[in-house]
Image (tube, one colour):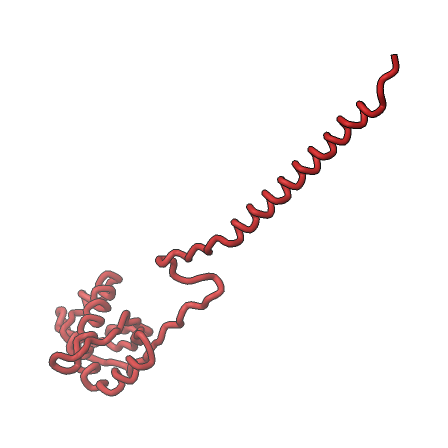
Length: 162
């Protein structure tokens, strides 16, 4: 018995239709998924990150003070200190404020330096403590009820005890 050629053609046509429908569904699903992905809001960068790679950090502002020469407290003999230092400050506005009040700044530094013995400031720990004390003293407000300065560090560029 011979088979009817029309019966063999029908299943082949329905298989082609099924493949076309499945392909269309996959294309639409892929397009919908891609659209969803690209429409999502971008995540904000973490607020605690300090600097992005393409941004430059603000350069610190340094202010050099004139040389200080002071007599130190006897330990046991007479000695003096000659020191050069720079202040690390917040910005140019702070620099102008410090320049305006430079006699007060120099007085504060001189009072701190001249109150020390050479044995107190000749070690690394002593210089570190001196730096902290100078920052604290310089940052005191210049006027009663005024704002404090924003000196973040005192950096010694020369430090000679004789």
